[in-house]
Length: 240
Image 1 (cartoon, one colour):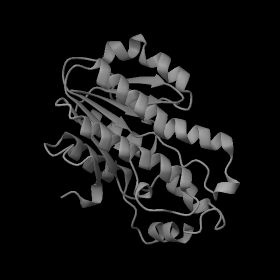
Image 2 (tube, helix red, strand yellow):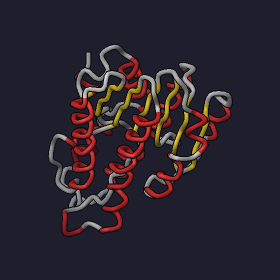
Image 3 (tube, helix red, strand yellow):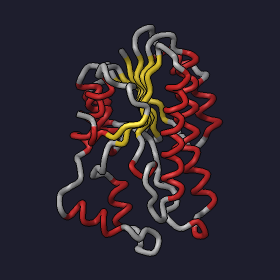
Image 4 (cartoon, one colour):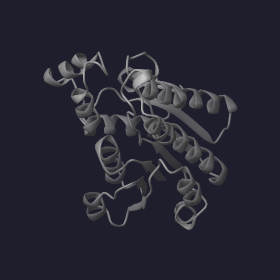
């Protein structure tokens, strides 16, 4: 078994990478920056690709290149599409067009390109996990771009599951609210751009945020379980 993970350099992605490597699963991490701590701890298990997932042309070139081809093997393969950005947090009239394009490319185009490439090139069992969000399923003012991009991953998972491939399992999984840099940015947003900010401030002050390590452990447990893929869209907090 091997795994490919986007956004492995920090936050939930770094915790997911650490969890996979601790279980001795060879990992190919894709991010703009390397993870020097994990590279030092697991030199024989971690391979890294420095890519900006906002550059779809560069990603396409990499998908056809030698690093990915050399990593693929006959056994089961895990793909975790974790990398994501909040994008512009504002009402529609206040959104920067460049931020919209970047968010859609990172949050939607990159996961779909990776999923299609591996479904095409990997002949063995393939498990695809899209890191989704409750924002995909509930409207939040100021989060139209983030919510729409995560909802796109949800529906991609539904449609791929409907294709009925026997060797491919897929799930768009909301991991809950996790104490990462993304949450720090949310709490720093103005009330005007994100009227529900106080809710997230309270989650932090009341100690109700999950740690990245706790969420990563539960996510990998589910990804490796027999039940993975039975639901194309799921919430980690509801899986028991």
